[in-house]
Image (cartoon, rainbow, N blue to C red):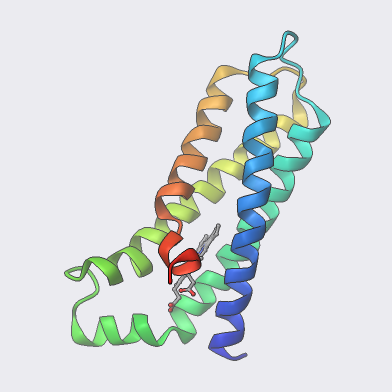
Length: 145
Ligand code: HEM
């Protein structure tokens, strides 16, 4: 498998995840402020699909990182991985935060699947997952010039 194909796939899925995450936030807010607090079908589905695509990204990302990425290899070889803020963000902070976010989404998906009523702690977990994603997202690489 070619590195560029994987990078393009990772970029493509990133747009999709932004859309799914937007639906997920809306569904979470609507349920949170809703009168009954009942977990809706939309919330269940949006959590499930956001989680699935996070897992796909994690798989592609980890394979790129450890087997293909020329940038990661160069940074390791030259010893600048942690001292350079750009390489640290791309190859350490981005993967690490996204994996934590994926784990939180996986827990949430299980909670929403097996319960009927929303709990505040799950809302907080959802916002932490989204905040990590927003922080670690490679905004300038995807949308920058
Ligand atoms: C969960 C584990 C993840 C890992 C291990 C991972 C890993 C990586 C790596 C290694 C790169 C840099 C590739 C390179 O230039 O050599 C990268 C770039 C990127 N990742 Fe991830 N990623 C993960 C999750 C995500 C998620 C969930 C998203 C989107 C929501 C995402 C969006 C991006 C974007 C937009 C880039 C920039 C692509 C470019 O420079 O053209 N990643 N990722």
